[in-house]
Length: 498
Image 1 (spheres, rainbow, N blue to C red):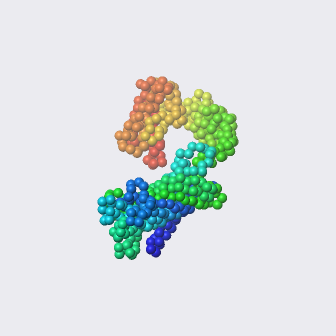
Image 2 (image 1 turned 90 degrees about the vertical axis):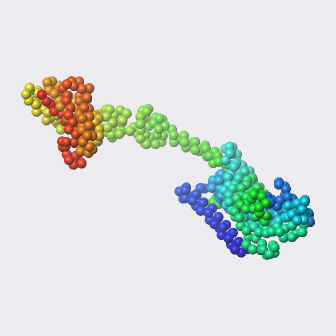
């Protein structure tokens, strides 16, 4: 008996530690600060009647209550149960329970009354861990009214230790036992079986610290041994515990109510007016840019303009001109721009000041991509003009043959000017690639680059296609053999010919 009680105590302590660990984990998950305002623990004590369902039972549904010597035995047992519960939310929780109780049953045989009529008595200790759900809070819809009654359901698993004596009904002769020796005269270690409790109950709130409960629990024993009768049927033993009890609620100091009694909508409803006031003040947005006036550093932004987190119009290139009025929203860093956001070209030669090596070129002068003057001479019948050496090259991104607006358009304009200034000259367009990749791939991409330049001159500047020829060098003539210089190899060069 001492060993059994020691085992019960250890298991109960383990259950308690599990519940406490759960509470600590909950605190950790909320930043280390437990939720305030609600009691989450309760200790319960209840007592009631046990009704056995197994092989030795007189009727299927109603137990025999009256005891008559030599004729019948009462089939009602009793139980007393203690529990410790912890609410995880206003719907779910955990409960550890321990119960001491008795069970009994009888079976009268009208044909063989003396030989086959039997009864049994049993005493047991049961402990379990169950999870419960507050059914009322799952479906409660009244946002303001507090409740005094709640319904709940639960289920879990545990262990049952029992001793049973089975005797003949009319003679009290020993028949069988569990947990006894010597025909039921001496005790031995209790029989232990797994048990699965499921049940439901109704709880009434008496005060902020006390609840009254009415509960029914069906204990499904994973055995047919409770009545010391095995093999008569395939149905395992079970018993119904109907109880009444009280629960004392405790928890965080200053908390006024347990989580299970908190109206799911109550806290929101109680603060809705203050919340609405705060929201109105925070969401007012006069210019409709998505930033509340309280935080808006540019409160009169035009409709539809993209703004940053402070309500200021976005200026991607940081040139001081907001994107919605910036004609060139990707100006180079530090470049001087006009009121429209376009970079300045003081001498009007088509090269922005930040890239112009001759910032004061006379009007109408032909220049290259750096703004330097190109001295173009007509191509003579039997010679190639030196102007070819002044024609700019255009460059491409990795594995691309796309003409880039910002880096290539002005250079192609220079090429077009040179062709128009020399109407009898022809232009050879030569494509190149960097050394990465196979020869075939580089040959193809360099040809595409040359063709893209020819197509641009024909489409944009109306150059006759018969004056243009393309060539593809691939990676055969590299300007740079080091990785850092590969970008100069991805280019197209131009040569004026006879």
